[in-house]
Length: 115
Image 1 (tube, rainbow, N blue to C red):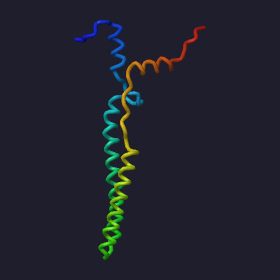
Image 2 (image 1 turned 90 degrees about the vertical axis):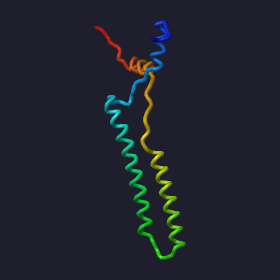
Image 3 (image 1 turned 60 degrees about the horizontal axis):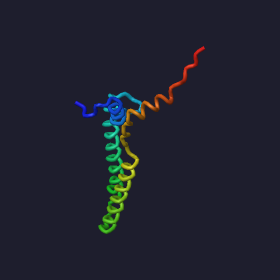
């Protein structure tokens, strides 16, 4: 049972606390697409690291000092690319309070002109 007894105050709190998704898709699609987007990000990260490390496999020489130097350069390149991908990757958008959603809907509502 609510501790707030005033109906107006109760409605104000409801509009502030309740949130709605404004991303433009239904709720079921949102639940599925968030996990798909995260999965896609992880796949891209693994692919990029594999491509960078594959360069190291092709560049192996007899000189061990050069190998260590090349390995450290490739490792650094892999870390830089991973950071770039994570920065540009998928980010969830927070839901918007219900009060703001209703204000936006009301402002976009066309006015009716009666003849």
